[in-house]
Length: 488
Image 1 (cartoon, rainbow, N blue to C red):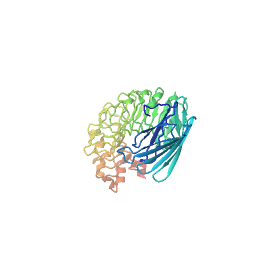
Image 2: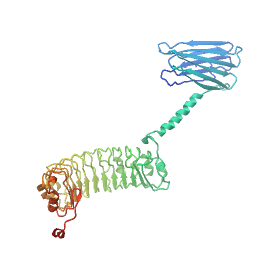
Image 3: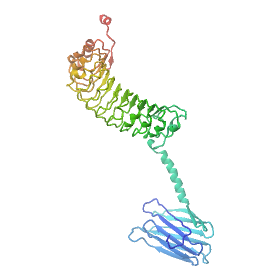
Image 4: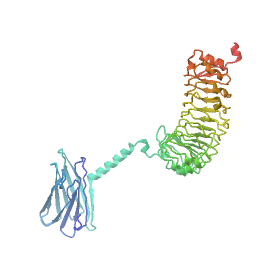
């Protein structure tokens, strides 16, 4: 309303249409209750100018009209006629007809009771296609306090419909967008010490909220869910010793720094980029951060109780930062080009560096690595330069997998006096004569399939004669040969 007009009550009327070119219409009314004056101020959101009508209640009627806003196409021309009681009585009625720039019109009317508490109006709107729709509204006035409340019944219906649609949309949200707590997916109480749940069927937990009420929680497993933030786990940090959030959507390990008593941590198959927060978990014995987005090994070097570490399927390029207590180290499916950083791992018994970018084993194994029993190096590019001295420090090696490499000779393996299982499928061993360097080894299992030598018709019988302890050739098992069996 204009600043020059007396203000005792205000109203607004906003109509939203379904089509983009249909205007929104707003108006406000200012009434001076102490006099017979009546002011009407309206503004049109389609670009037509605002307008003000001042009425003396003693007049029969006052008309006003407005054309489209200058410079606007398809503007709104609005014609208003007001019919009043000739004596200025309490009843008056407003009729409004609006002409759009495209030739269509809509009209609405208001009936007011100046002395009553309510004023009602009905609107009929004509669309371009000839159809119409109507809606009603009521005005409640407290003339003494100068208050004006406007209730649009159609707007109320629209709000209710929108709310209903909101609930429907919530039910149509994707699983990761829903708010699902562990309490909704599985049963536990304030005194529970363990919570175990796998979301492969049924609900998938999306948040860790609510676990702060479980005061003695020591074991938490929530596998295959949709948890993105593990920071709420800090509320259970004082008691938690086992934490498994395998196959979720964790972006970081924030929260684990509040869990110094953890013994086992499994956060494999997430999208974690740094292991640094684990540095405070000095009691950790097993740590699984496989299938994440780690580019380096950080936060682990001082975990002197850590025995088993799985960092497979990440983006690690360099082998460094491992604690000396390690006994099992899994680094498969990374981007490692050379084996290094193992000098201080005297207790290491298992090493997995398969599916990386290795081309040579020269200098890979220091003399201190004498306890290594299992070595997995399949799916690399280790070639003909493999020499006996590369493997000589591995005096206790019992299992070796070099499948899917580029080997042409088996002579380097003759130094592995404890070797029992040797997997060399998909290499380039030329013929059976190239296998003879293995004769002195206590091999029980040998894979040479998909090598040129395996195409020889005498392949199996030759190997069994060469290696008397052999009970498995490729995927086929055979009974152990004994002297009595040979005589029979």
